[in-house]
Length: 119
Image (tube, one colour):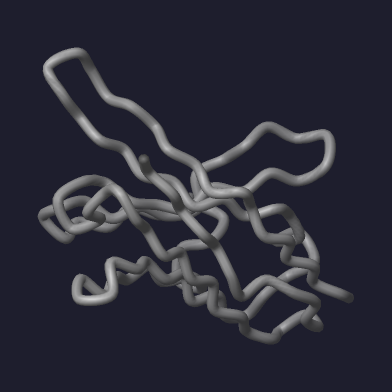
């Protein structure tokens, strides 16, 4: 059974920083694709950042240069370092893992953590 548990969200002022963590059980991040998505009220869920098993990183256009995704294989944990935060970064952030198999790719999601950026 796969479980993804996020932590690190909260309230921060514009220009500040937060680091989100996602600890996984039942799936090995380093052998799959791990990432972060976010969803603001009234908007669709969007990709924030992802990291592949080969270490390639992709970022959403709105966070490039400000956010960094990284992983700790020993802890089976993925992090999202968020710097220079803006009010428009306010959203619920979800940890995601993608595992491929013969039948296709399956997504796993955490419960989400709220990030609120004050102006």
